[in-house]
Amino acid sequence: MVKMGRVLAVAIFLNGLGAQGATGSGTVGISVVVRPEVALTMQGVSAVGVKIRLARASQTRLWKADVCAAPPAGGYVIAKSGSYAVPLTAIEGQGNRVCLAASDGSLTATVPLPPSAP
Image 1 (cartoon, rainbow, N blue to C red):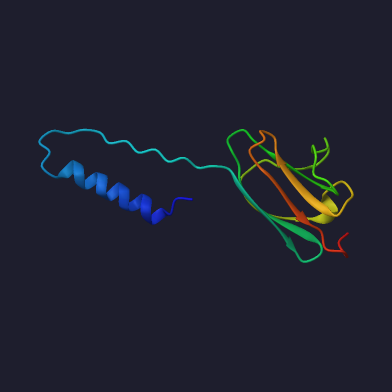
Image 2: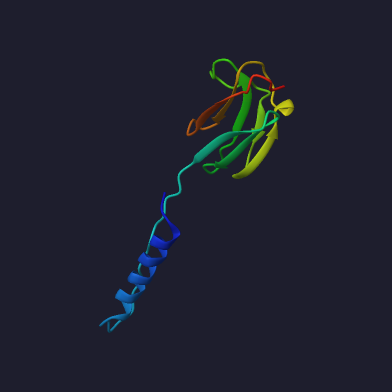
């Protein structure tokens, strides 16, 4: 993960290069790649926390299972990057884990359910 301070330092450095000793004008380009990422956490015994950065045109599904194979058609859908607290009662399936998979295959994650979870 690239820290914002490093990106800013690179931008300032590149800007300074253009200003030092240059007699003409030019263009300097910079490219940043942001990759999909996810973190699943239990929030007590009644919700799962999802912090996710999705790839463009991708979405994820959450479901409960003992083994996280392919997501069911009716799984809980997350279509935008962000932070979510998803109630376990909103997640379909049965099992001892909450599973997550992205539609493009770029992300998978799982978190065990506490014994007293709904």
